[in-house]
Length: 209
Length: 209
Image 1 (cartoon, rainbow over the protein chains, first blue to last red):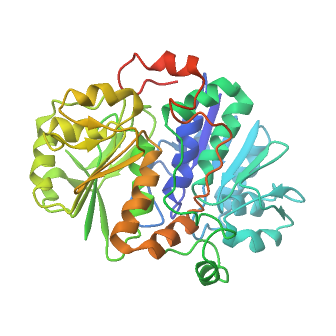
Image 2 (tube, rainbow over the protein chains, first blue to last red):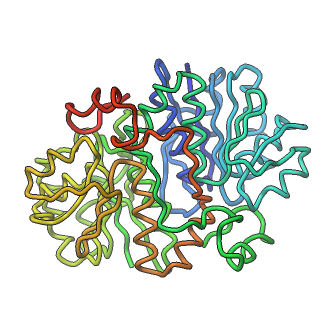
């Protein structure tokens, strides 16, 4: 089983690393980080680079694809969109975190499907014929989309459980000690102070704080 | 304000990226990834490399130090331990995630202090004169330690709130959509099935599932 995690200039690091940390332990899995070119790929903060070990051309039949989001994913990058369409033809699971679902939608893979994205991008994704939901992790057939950034951890654990069973996923959860205790209850637009939500709601994608 | 996140061979990626994603947005902060040598540093799964932009010698006065953990951090690496002791003399906050606290303890920085670590390492850290607690995030003076792997997100948000105020930290939480909904309740040894806990408790550090 091959898991391919896509990297591109301006991706959000936790979007990629949350699913990585939860999916990589799948029994028999090989995980690869893939980008247009091999080598370091810079994140949205222009601070951290993750290294892509494979180019798009080198990854032709992944079983699972993970597409992270970023504040402004390039929805016109035909090299990436073509790769997504090509590998999706044979994936078992095609997944995204945050605005990564915009890339899947731009590739035409989510037409008419239920999906989610970063909360600030839910209006935008409708324009691609997607039915956005308010859920944190959305399964529609083999397409699994997660809400913003940190939701990739919940997506990864949920998918790990579907693939390898509850005991495996619980083991992963125990070993990454995922017993979240956020110091605030402001992690969704339904829960955060209204003035914060209003500050970001009209803006596109995922602005920086 | 400079935030220095330490990388070393065999670190756990989410240990570094959780605090990174939550601390980097601090107003006026410059975040750097630092290692013995600049360049790619390979993680514990031998799959993912994060790029260290600075060498230890180039980072002499960080305001915040973050030490991620890993299954077997080298507690005899004097280059790293010396650097931790040196920079700790002038930090405002010295922090760790998971078994990163073993490195702080091995450097002699946690003598007699309350601290935490990955749940499988709590017995080991006692041997360094540390008082382990069952809390997920522990503040003792300027020393802030987090439990295993994913606890670095809670640590980063908590510290961001202390430094820049609740509204800033809530903004970060909202933008990373940190409204955790784990599919299982197995994220701590108190909650996971007893047979899973027993399987890992006697072993050292953080074995792989």
